[in-house]
Every structure is written in C-alpha cells, then in structure tokens.
Image (cartoon, rainbow, N blue to C red; front, side):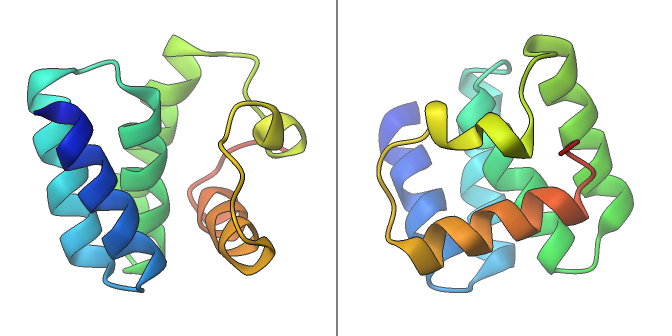
Length: 100
C-alpha cells in the first residue's frame, strides 16, 4: 500500500494541498520508515505549510539515509516532473534545509 500512499502524497503536493500531502507521506513512513521519496515530500510539504522544524527534521532523516543528496543532484533521483512542479519541489526542499 505504501506506493499508493506515496502517489497520493505527491498528487496532493503538486495540487498545493500541503497538509494532505504530509498526511499521506506520513502513512508511507509508517510502513516504510526509510522511504526517501516520502521523506522528501514530507519535508517540502511541511516547509510550505510553515512548519519549518518538522520540515527540517524530515530533511535530517533524509541526510542520514542519503548523505549525498543535494538540490544540485535532485534531478538525478527523481522521475521526470513538469518544470513548474520540479521547481516547486526544489523550493520546498530548500526551505526544509536540503543543501545546495
């Protein structure tokens, strides 16, 4: 089920429904605690919702799992997004503290 939850999280994120995106991402993380995609979505969603401490906590967990992940290499690990979606995702992760 975690894959379905993850796709729901992403759909809500790209629709600008940050709280819903975070809820779905948290459902993924209950089943797969190291799911980096869900952690990224949680971090970006929480950052856009103004919940910076929670966003940074998710980013910290991402960095524990994948210390090489940066904004600059994010495109290497993501599926193809529309440019405006990718930009929004990157901006959320910047706000959440993912290094450049």
